[in-house]
Length: 237
Image 1: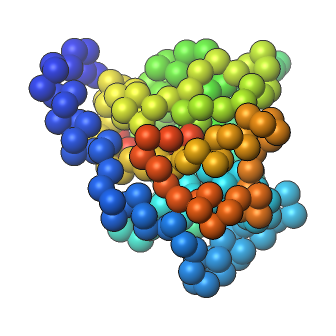
Image 2: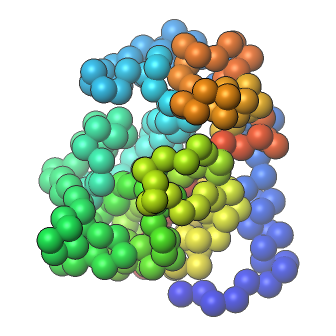
């Protein structure tokens, strides 16, 4: 585990992993028919209809699809924390283990993860903001992975209070990157999305805007108005 990062190292991390070019930012400014078909087929559960679901999660899934096509991981055992995550069908693991918090023995508490099984892939979306010690939780996930294993998570940068009192923090893209690198991961990909229209409606209505709540301009990815970020990282061998 790396303890100290120099100023030069931090600058390099920012410019090589975090800073996004216009091609990335504009990639999904306008969803085409194939993207919409993919979203409809992936988010086909009644509780996860893509047109009304929080658009930050919709945008996350599009990046996740693209990244899985690049890295094509062969997954024997997947650990996941939410049963309805739309990323799960894209992974096609041979075995899946639901890491569910059990208040009687804390088996699923990421702060004190007691699962002895080792995983090829750990998926835990929209969870870091609900952890009072995210560094400890990510370290436990590192321990639970096989060498070379992958982890994916998404987390709000800004958000309305929810699941209180268990809502502790948010992460900038840079902060998310450093969290995983600090705990011995190599960052493979880092994504982000947000815009002013989404933010204004988020705090005006205190509800998460979906695709049907935003204008065509409202799905534009504005670099300085980040709402959510996500990461794909690998346990170093």
